[in-house]
Every structure is written in structure tokens, then in C-alpha cells.
Length: 247
Image 1 (tube, rainbow, N blue to C red):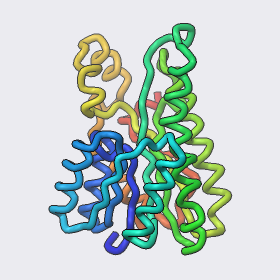
Image 2 (image 1 turned 135 degrees about the horizontal axis):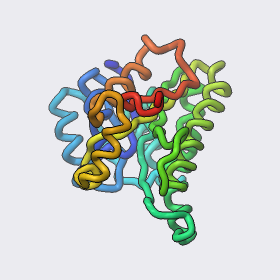
Image 3 (image 1 turned 90 degrees about the horizontal axis):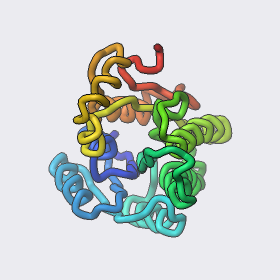
């Protein structure tokens, strides 16, 4: 990955942090995007210690103007964007009948519109250089159901559909677009949820490998899909779920 430049959204913690650091270990220079400045600075320190250049951008990926500022800054500092990992995401867990409109809009904006925003912002540069790797972090909930997660499932299903469409549209420009659909991954965000014994028992009973995943297991696949070894793979959605979706 030496000489490549990767933008990672939601890079401050969890899966995004693991992906960013795995790219750093592989030699890619990084643009770290998140709303939490403190978390960004922490990841930057770890990445810089691995010998790569890093740019920190505190930005809301659901806002087009802020996304364009991130990409403009990347091009100013690094002159190119080779890899984009769309990882920013939130979730609302409650029955649809209890939603207010903002519940729906915020999840769709952060999870799905952000993918459009960043793909749109990097498109011309990747097309011009005839090279690009885009990895969108979707979810098993994009193709399965475990209520109550209506807006989250809709957003992740949208990411999978958008991934396939862009893969077909941009293949002629040397750009690959793939999705990764994590299953139940242990992160800061899921720690308290998994700590509920009833929840933990229910989920583990459905996972053939009988354990939760680790953020690093998503990161390893992301780096592979961004590498030249994956140059003939595009438009795919990869489940990393311990077997959840095969049952």
C-alpha cells in the first residue's frame, strides 16, 4: 500500500479505527474522518507511529459541503485519493411506529447519504487517474432482519444496492467497488449491548462459530479488497459474520 492514499470515515473508534490502522500497517497514507476530535487524534498518533502520513478531518459525512472540504484537503495535501472506505454509521433500535421523522432521516443521512457524498466527491479524481478502490461497510442487516432496526436495515440495504450499481458504472474507469457486511462485532458501541445476558445468549446461539467478531477481522478484508490482489473483484458484498447468514 506504500504510496496509496486512503480516506476512512468513522475512523475514530471500532471498525473504522481498526481499518485505518491496518491500512497504516500496510503503508498507506491516511485521511481520518470522524466527528470526535479526541478519538481522531488518538488514531492519528497510532498511525503516525507506524511511519505513515496522516490528515485528520473532523467532519460530518452526511453533509455534502463538509465532505467536499475533506476531499479538497486530501487533494491539496496528498494530490490524490486511491482508496475510500465508507464506514460512518449510527443505529436506532425501536419499533417503527415509535419513530419521529428525525430518527429515520438521521440514520439514512449518516449511513447511506454519506456513502453517496464521498463517492460523488472522489469520483472525478479516481476516473481521471483510472484507478480507485471503494469499500463500503454495510451489515448483515442489509439482507436479513432482526427487528427493531428498520432505518438501519434500510440504510445498509441501500449501501449494498449502491455498491453494485457503482461497480457496474465505474468498472470501465479502473475503479472497483465492494461492500463488507459485518455480523456481530465487539466494539465500544456494542459492548454494553452484548453485556446483557439475554441478548448475548440469543445472538451467540445463532452464530455457528459461537463467538462475536473482532474489528480487525473486518480490517483484514478491507485491506485485501483495496489491494492489487483484489483487482478482479467488484460489485460484491462480503459477509463477515461467523456464519450467521447461512442459517
